Length: 140
Image 1: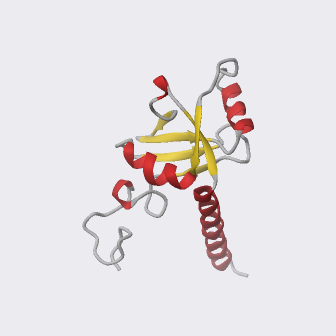
Image 2: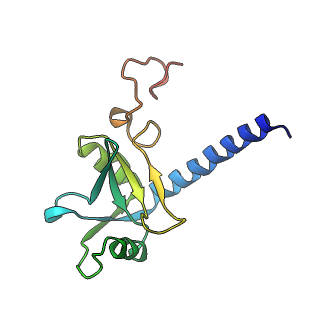
């Protein structure tokens, strides 16, 4: 196989794998640690994007707490479906916001950026509000 075909195949395979991961995330309950005053989810800002920390289980949250040097304090969290996080919590924050899953669990981390197809179009950073046709932010 030539280099172009194999690159295209890797890209297609990567997109399929990510689509499977995203679907699984949307259907699965995750832990959402609460930040200051338990009113908002724990977040971190990086390059103009706010990232909500979410964890697949208590062990992943504990690894994160250890990395932060905060394993000795209690961690309050809410459990909710990934879909609720992407479709409800992300838009409610009012800034470009994605989800960082299992930060600190080497080899198991995943990022769900605030782009079309992951978060609602209205809050996707790549959504073109003037586009016509597909409803996905691109012209058809």
